Length: 259
Length: 286
Ligand SMILES: Nc1ncnc2c1ncn2[C@@H]1O[C@H](COP(=O)(O)OP(=O)(O)OP(=O)(O)O)[C@@H](O)[C@H]1O
Ligand SMILES: [Mg+2]
Image 1 (tube, chains in turn red, blue):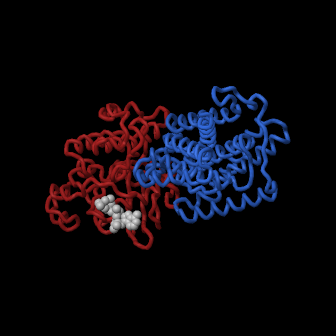
Image 2: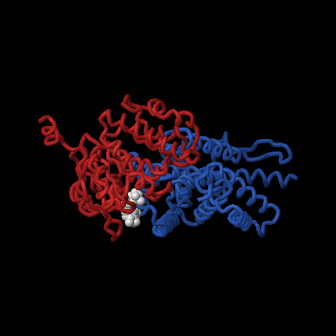
Image 3: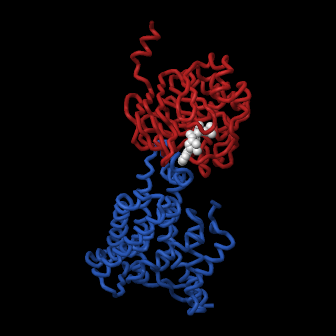
């Protein structure tokens, strides 16, 4: 009873309705409906299905959008990126997009609001001791795993209401992925909403019970992690994989992408 | 020996002046990537405004302040109304900036005519200092060098020791990401443009006092800024200093020893740098 009451009346953190997004004349997203409440949502799908475009549409980073994206009830479509970020959304982008000439410390200074908030520079260094050791290294000198920690730390330090992560496990060693999942679980426990984009089904399932599968610019299926993990037919049909492990291995390699 | 020393001193003076103009250009073009081909016009605008204010009030320092502040404001206006809305469209930005510089040049010609103006800095900065071998050297030229060093230090502190500087450097690396972290990038580029323009205006007053002001100077300083930034490396502060020194010295030493060919010396240096190190002496490869 309590559960139903909550889902019926709570204003969703993020509510996407009938979202179309295009680059020039190519239509990438077609009629996306997706709602994120306090529980995390993971979007999975194969290469080129439009997952990153969805992140960019939400953040106002390029694609031309029709339809509605509401954050805490406020319409985001048409707003510039920095205003969207200021409202409390933070993106950990695919390819990490670490500033190559800034040091680790400068990355954190850049977003540090210097108000007593949940996330402070000290706490980021506590959670990622490796970053504290690399404090004075520039972005270009960091390893892929260190860059990903920094991208996550940078996003958390803005103290977002909603965290969007675009394939955070891409190109990382399994041990680093485990560490990332543990950090995410801790973040979620504090009440930050999460929209996770993943190709790695086991990572998505470890973080989020709710899954949405994207196929050529549409949400083809909304399901639970438990159901999808058990249903290899559907995995095969929508994700083109036989097993979760095979899917993870088929993920793209560690490359920088234009945003 | 005396000739060489004198040419060297003159070279350093000119380098100081080129540096103050070019460091503004480095901020605007090298870092914010705004193709501000009106930079020379901002220099000459500052010179004339400084001249007017200094001669009418009798206070050179007021002229200096007026030149710097009014050109900084003009810069804010130019960037926010004209150039920022076509950011990233290189050809359009170049053409708009060139058009703007033609308009400014004509307005100044109508107001001031084609004669060369010169105005004098206050007495303590004027006169000459005794030096060995060359015997005496104009004090104000040494002041120019000191001013260049101070400007260089202040800009370096701003870029490498403040949060605003972190934002500027982050914007060079990845603008969309910087916006996605909540930074109003267009506002930042307007402020940086204002700062760079203000430096050009200041340099105009200083240059107008050390040398002279006349039509055509706009093209000269735009060209020298371009050459300095290309030789030093896009967006590098130390590169701008090295480039200014190199070009200033080459120009003055060339003028002293082979005046007929002195004009091409800077271009020979630029061509050599482009051939051997296309990103400039201190630039990083794209
Ligand atoms: N800036 C752009 N301009 C034009 N087309 C683009 C642009 N960005 C992406 N696309 C196209 O949009 C489609 C979806 O790309 P997107 O990056 O959103 O996919 P994705 O699901 O994130 O893929 P991946 O798993 O490889 O990251 C692709 O066909 C891609 O070529
Ligand atoms: Mg993607």
